[in-house]
Image (cartoon, rainbow, N blue to C red; front, side, top):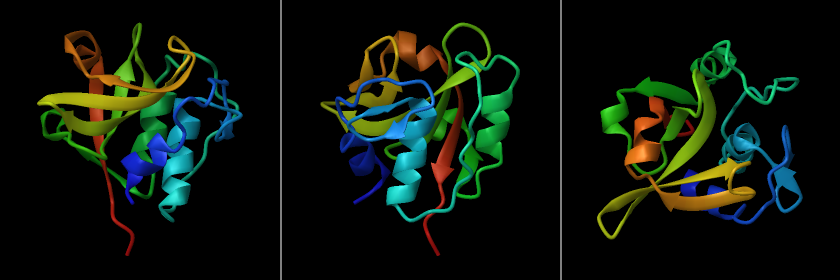
Length: 139
């Protein structure tokens, strides 16, 4: 299993700001924390963050993750972590779910969609990607 499989385990989990529990509630950072934990990878879980972290908090947190390495966004592929902007600054995390029928998909915990969902990384969502990170395999 890989990070995408672990994210798919959380499908239909309701959105809950700062949530970390599959089936009960999670947000985008909680989904990533769940996946890294299931993969047995070290991670630094953040708490106490606002609903819309516009001050670079989320980018700094991803840059500081011991199991993530920043990569060029154009190289993102299945299992990579995407940092997105919804309104202004990077404030949302999604996991690249790979290509289905020749189109890229993402999995993320979305307040807009009501929980953990998978959908196409279309032009609108693709334009939101600001940074990409590769999950470092366990040693």
